[in-house]
Image (tube, rainbow, N blue to C red; front, side):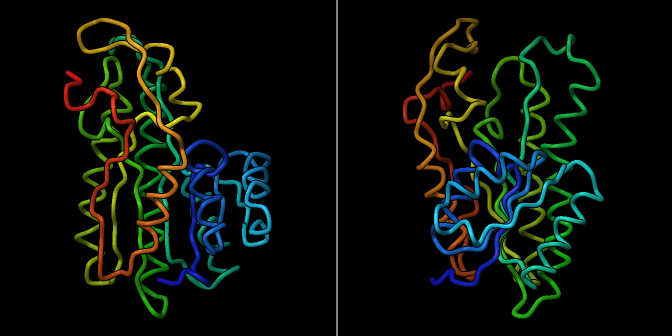
Length: 252
């Protein structure tokens, strides 16, 4: 399927999974709106796309703030007139401490960015995708292995990622009559700044500390590009991409 002229928004595009996927989408031929809290890393992401950087639009955005999200989608519509793909990727974690030691602010920060942010972005995407011609589009949610199996001391992150699975399913249902398709990619141990600690050793369900294998970010980017490029008549509802030997099935 040709992607020339297709418009995508990637949140959390200034680092990690978001950066890799934004660059891959640009190099595939998409025009990509790069959203994230800090402008400079977003510009660096655009530069990494080489000649395709001319099709990148940098829009500093805090996805936990409704006004920022509304402005992001308004600028996208103003610049391109439509939206074909939204990748809800922005996410954070909380300190890995016992549940009773977490502060309210630590909990709320993760909820605001990991769950409220994707909901706000999905709302705005619906408003554009329902009204445009041809109507419809695709929303890809970044879930996690933690959407299925928790790590020790990960209550805020795990709870929000389980909630993303619910948001994905509801979006699939509510978007059906508008040709809005939703899918979820669950990523395990990709080589990002957030995951590098896995290689040094992290707590396991049995109380031990063990190093875990990682996989290259290119595998995630390739998967997202494939999901984004499907015609709206087809959907990969959920896709797990993980380092082959990381603990998942036997995580706990």
